[in-house]
Amino acid sequence: MSVTKPLIPAAQAILRSRMLGSLYGGVVGDALGGPYEFQGRGSYTPSPDMKESHTFIFKGKPLAAGSWTDDTSMMLCMAVSLKEKREFDWKDVANRFIRWHKEGYLSVVDKCFDIGNATRVALVYYMGLDRLKKVWPDTPSCNPSPAQAGNGSIMRLAPIPIFFHNAAPDTLYAEAATSSRITHSSDTCVDGCTLMSAYIVGFLRAPGEWGIQEKKEKILSHSFALWEADSVCPSPMPIESEEFQEIHQEESYKTKTVEQLRTSGWVVHTLEAALWALWRANTFEEGVLMLLPLGEDVDTVCAVYGQIAGACFGYEAIPKRWLDALQRRDTVLDPIFEGLVDVSLSKSG
Image (cartoon, rainbow, N blue to C red; front, side, top):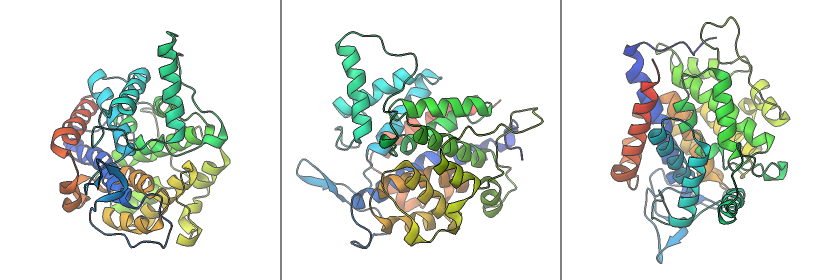
């Protein structure tokens, strides 16, 4: 199956919708799940609408409905870097992460109020290099231990497959891996970003005549692979970990019950739950509502679902009531996301 041939101009509107769907889908999932982060399954009844979040308190008050967390802030850092640099400069991205950590850059409340342990360790390492006036490495390799295989790199991934949607598959996979290694270098985290980037690009570039079910059946398949233009064979996905081999090759999530799912911060649990919901959902909204009651790291699970599902269903499929409720949409989200999509589309031809 080939989904990588250059798009004709008439397909630009479809591609734009899918790109924006992936970006805003991630933010919507993050903001909807934020109020229930760290709560146990069965201990709460989620709302189908945006609600204020008591998970984090800012200036003595809960975060307003539609507030997003570190998932979105880090995705915004990557998006604005790609938009402004017009290339993937991992050191620039890392420096923006540091600004977010220290100054609240691109935070919903101008303060970093939520950060994962592996991410904090990586940023402290880079800040230490600067403090000691040491040269940064040519390639990142922070937190390589399998014990640090959290979901902190897939939660922010969408700008990479969007920017490299028209690149050769090997380039896409290499850049997705680098984006992970800025903070999460374990093989499992890298494989998660590789697989997720392939799925997002697959949905971005699927023929317009394919319906939703056909797209899911062909892309969420063990036989799915991206093809390089004019190639006679697909480019294999460089996935080494047994856990993601099982998810991709055996499609194990398709037959699991909700009781068998975990929504912990482990990257495997997160991507598996997101794919489980996407496989079952007939609409973008339906998938989010399946995930919201599952607890634990539900904001990131919903953010990962939103990035993949947004590419599948498109921007227009995201409920307007959710989009309209997002905090700082006009001043932060819209200009950064629209700008990234403009730059990415300019690379299509």
